[in-house]
Length: 171
Image (cartoon, rainbow, N blue to C red; front, side, top):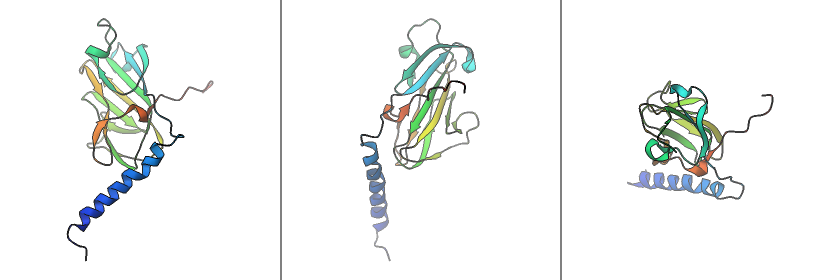
């Protein structure tokens, strides 16, 4: 028969092991550090037309009033895309402002076809395609956050975001 409180101690020890195991992977020389996602800003709704601006952004923490180069020709929609790398094994929940869509590895996490409280199982060190779309005609900000398996919610850090793969000629 387990001792009273042993369940909590065992759970705490298991969590410490989960957090410690990937540390070696995150800190090795072979573990590339991310540079961010490709951002495209469009004058039209729903990503229509040619982008007004394309740039690499370290994180998705966009404020139209402070992050847009000029007040004229402000975008009405935006898209961030590339790859995301999970630091820990487990379920991840993605969060964004209303009017945003988040798709990870082909699964809708927010907006569109997403189910309420959508989550995705990610493996440490693996790269997953990610795309976030924002309707800037109804929201003047965009932010990509996740709740990691350990339960903390925070902005997805630059070190785990990578630009899209280069297009292969003839593909």
